[in-house]
Length: 342
Image (tube, rainbow, N blue to C red):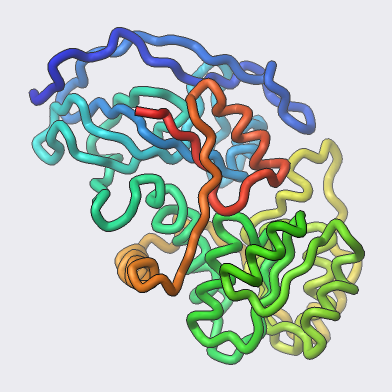
């Protein structure tokens, strides 16, 4: 077994200790210390360098059946992380390798080697494998090109456009020949970033007025594709703005994640029939077959400077919950990640 000279004695990890009712609060979580041991055969020990906080994690805090199991109480939470192998009991990994895996929310991860993927820090910064080259990036790529069947000349509207997924959707649409790309975001600073830095044709601050009014002003000829990260008022407005045979990818509905009562559906669903619209959900796990194509194309755009990305980095595992809650409040521009500062 390959190992670093000395393993740490303990690892800090975030546990869910109470299921949130509405918005999560800090007392729903606890940062605890656990012992670190040598990995068993077929396993590796990883020192995490970055971990991801993502909207879908809010759903895992509820004790409901869904496409991923709920977090267990009094157990460490999980999520995307990138780190360095510091001990290996598997021939496929050597000490010093950098890997992507699913055991975030902890400083040191002991995991089955089959559940780790080597990543190249020379191709892109390690944190990028949690965002632009990771799960959010593949969600954007597959959700636009496959699920929404995007084609050159489509007018595209993206909600939550300054987030990790939305910012990439808009840029991919532009690079693939969209006739117009419109985004919504929650601050004037984000709107400016979308238009001036990412090349969106138009963007608006949804907090400044009714979404439908602002969308119609930004897309007077309607839209052909809607990529939904928000739900609620945004989805209703998009149904009204979609042209005949328009397509919508339903990726998230963050506007309702912390509601304690069921969120009412759009009031204009009859339009779906008359316009022959297609509304389809996306889960990234259905699209791993596109992974090689996705990484190759996006890495090329990154290298040429045609695609840009931003990260909001919070330092220290002790601030992990604050980063998660900040992400739910929209305090991030681009991908929110937690750096472990090592």
